[in-house]
Length: 433
Image (cartoon, rainbow, N blue to C red; front, top):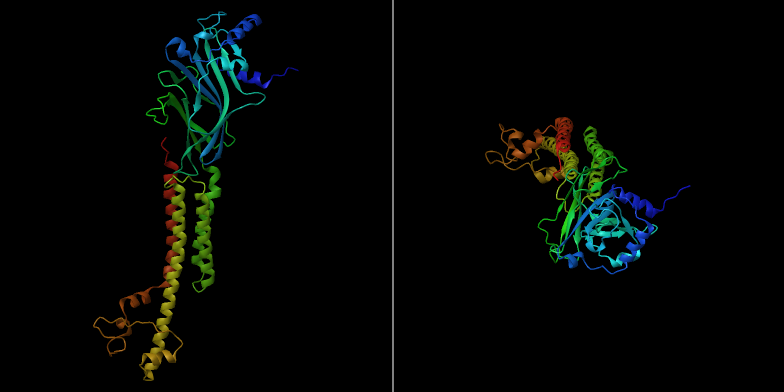
């Protein structure tokens, strides 16, 4: 049974990007190349040629793994290609790089120059070392060097979370040369073998929208004027799996608040407990969702959703507080009028005496009538309603039963309108890259 080592698998995969390269050197020729590599050529090529060294790079992303809402791990093959005329060998067609190649063993890495490029905006990174360090170098007859590494890099991704949980992540890979200025070594994207993203996400609702590979324009992050290129990957998340976890529970909470309108107004304990429970549940869900959002997001659609849902729940509690207070007020006024009439027939007009003779707290309705007369100054042609203040007459005229009926309809209708407007906007809004 034929077995292939991890190193061979990696090399075969790497060479698949350069289909024309063939390894047809004889053992004697390879020994001669190894002998050449024993000479120290670790200084940059531009020391020898006098011209700057152009390093073409490309990457092949094979895995993306999101740690949380703003951090992701990228695993990719990183290829760097440049020419070092000191490493030419006279075997094969020197004018054609796609003829033969020779794999440089690890012990010779220190004898050749390798670009000191790195991912500038990494959180953490490492070169894979499964079986052995996944760093490979091979050269072609004209001195073209292909340097490959398999890396995993942790990046901080910007979340455009206005449509959270339907979001768009922008992940930036920024490559920079470390020790050399832009006049000495230049990084550029390989125009032939362009970056590839060959990622299949376990969650079908996560998709790679697009990617852009450019140079770093107006970049001032480095101390020296070093060369820099970047790859911006846009990754989209759909919201389908989150509807049941975020939106539907809050809808039920608001509808439970609406059910409180059907409980008798006299059932104070039931309505207050139900309203308080809905309020606490809504606040808990809102705070829990806020933990998943980045702190730099000023406002998002999910926050608008929860604020409006919270307003509906609070309105239901305020409505009951109002109608219950009006009911109590009206009951006191009616009871007070009954006691007043009964006592006036017995000749008692003193307010203190009235209060002592009844168990009802007297309501101050003596805020002055239109002509300045107080309630105690009765006239035969003046009715009690006319002697009350405007506020008292207003509260006495409020039909609390009718208010309850109208709120049952208006509350549900207003929530339905909010749902319609929210989802029309949510489903038609597009994040801008």
